[in-house]
Amino acid sequence: MSAYPANTLSLVADVGGTNTRVALAEGTVLLPETVKKYRNSDYPGLDTVLELYVQEKEVDCTAAAAAIAGPVRDGKGTLTNLDWSIDADTLARATRAEKVSVLNDLQAQGFGVGLITG
Image (tube, helix red, strand yellow):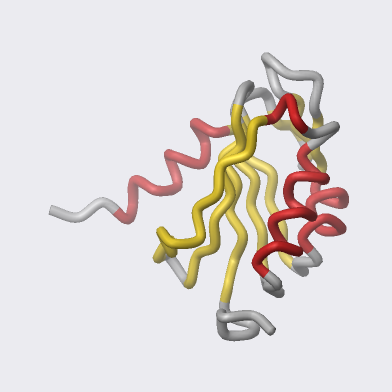
């Protein structure tokens, strides 16, 4: 049984050439205790990493977003320094989320600018 409330969580992934960091967020709040880092060379693709994370956390997510270090076009991205690609359909299957988005990592940071306070 999951330690997290149903129907409130999003899965977020920061995918670089060497490592992928995956976490859960509730609304706009990242849950730091859920952050997990995976060495990409240990896995055949991002879908495997995400499936493992969902299984380990025993969580159902309503949404998922993957920010990747590479170009993204029409919901499909390819990493610049790793032979991985991800698309919205694969992200949805791997996370079982209904709403998904594949973004370039710089684009994802841009979306976060609106949350900066101070």
